[in-house]
Image (tube, rainbow, N blue to C red):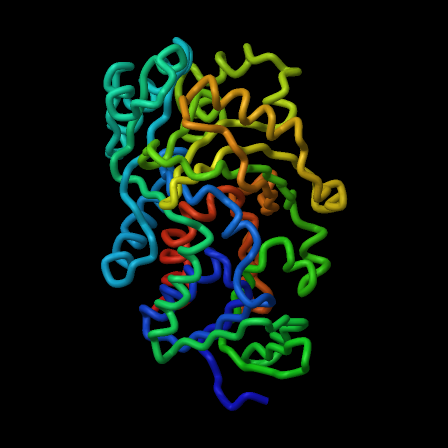
Length: 386
């Protein structure tokens, strides 16, 4: 039995778990963070690293905007690789132009900073854009890019500077007993820990702790595929590049008056629709470019339907479509990978409280990197209201 009693124990050191730890520590709480691996290695590190509140509905955009503030604040204290080069949505036809113009009007009402750019302004800012593809753009100057393989680990190092923080890597939690006045947390080696409150942010892996709740949830698993191009020696693409298919996919555009009419005209049997493809670009500091991505779905009760295969046809489609959008020095693939995250079919996040002491929080979907810090800020304040 560990002698220390923590105010908060968090299971899962991905972006959602670490964000809750950050804000709990800022309130002066004693926090333990448990990670079954040496370090996070699931969806938190297998994404683009685009912090884009611009793509979210009104509720989650507010969390994302708070996240921008939080990321910048940490970056001011310690280099976590955050870069503010903005995001741009490139419209390729009249329908997409109409949607970005409508979103610009919504942004003005929501007081979220964005700028409509002409074709010429887009090409001046991003000289490698294909002139035939680009018709106009909507630019968000406040948005951020991070390297997800680096950022989360640097934030963890930042948390370790706090004497109230304890990190337990390679520690698989097998049970949480919340029937007494506190949580008794037991790992796979039968070590035990006490905490007043526990938060489970272990993605779909919370099945191992709360089997019944997992299979009764409305969670579905989403498999993404993406690739990285080898470094470009001269090409510089600042910030996040989002394109026409993204304009027709992201939730922020759902509120546009023309959105439903435009969506209804889409070719139902197209390859990009079948595999949930939209084309994003983000260049890393070494000159490599992340390109993707695709989406495959499986209900929680049929999660074995998510396989581990990389599909050549999807990678080929990424390259085929990307060449229509951007001129690069080369298109040589350095690496390809898949990631799996959980999301809810009906709700925007899965949140269940057990015995008033265990908070299961998962199913944030593709909003994690953008919205987790802002969401966790509000959530910690609710849980530990004083």
